[in-house]
Length: 67
Image (cartoon, rainbow, N blue to C red; front, side, top):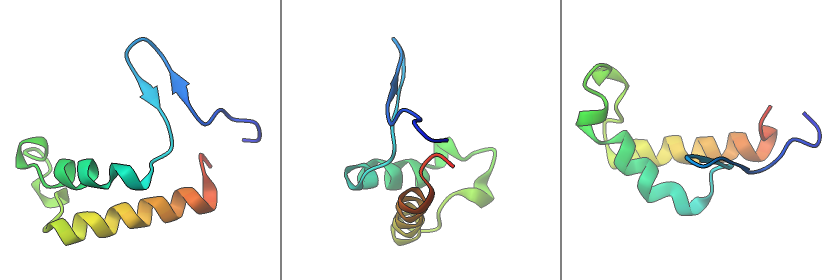
C-alpha cells in the first residue's frame, strides 16, 4: 500500500517496523516457555534459532514492508 504510515500510535500501542535493536526482545519472547504453553511446538528451540527467525523477519520487511 503506497503511502502507508511507517508508525501508528494510539494511547495504548505503537506499531512500527522491526529494527535491529529489537533482536534481544524478540529472542527472549520466542524463548519464554510461559508464552508458548499452548503452542510448545512453535517455541524456538534455541537462542540461535530465534535469532535466525528474527533475521528472516528483518529481511522480509526490507523486501516487502507492510505488504
